[in-house]
Amino acid sequence: MFVAADAASSKTSDPTVVLDVGDLLGITDHFVITSGSNLRQVRTIAEEIELRVKEQGGGSPRYVEGLNDARWVLLDYGQFVVHVFLEEARQYYDLERLWADAPRVERSGPAAHRVGAEL
Image 1 (tube, rainbow, N blue to C red):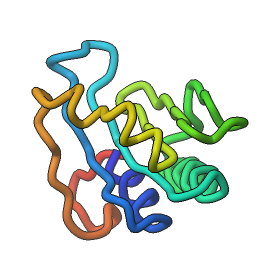
Image 2: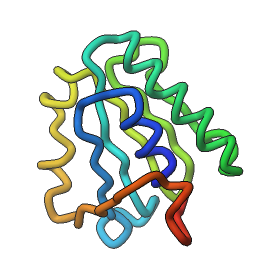
Image 3: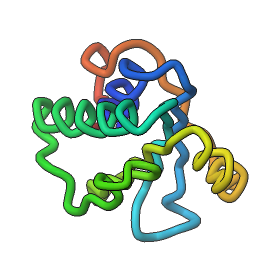
């Protein structure tokens, strides 16, 4: 998840948030939430996440949704799910508020330099 979050942050100035939803949801451990200012940027962020996760040995997502429309792209990696929104869609759906009970996972520095960093 840290690799995905760092990959997203490398392609956008919008905040990238990691939420620990494991105790609340049961089907995944973490949500990575980010956004881009236009459709092209949303696709670029999603592609960068796929590339970097695969490079770090995480493989391809199990499921990808929304890439054609690119207003809300979902990348399901099993243990974590990445949500890449168009800015307006992120504000509308407001997952951070919806999952406000989920603790935020703090990250610092590049994932490659973190000991035990998860994909």
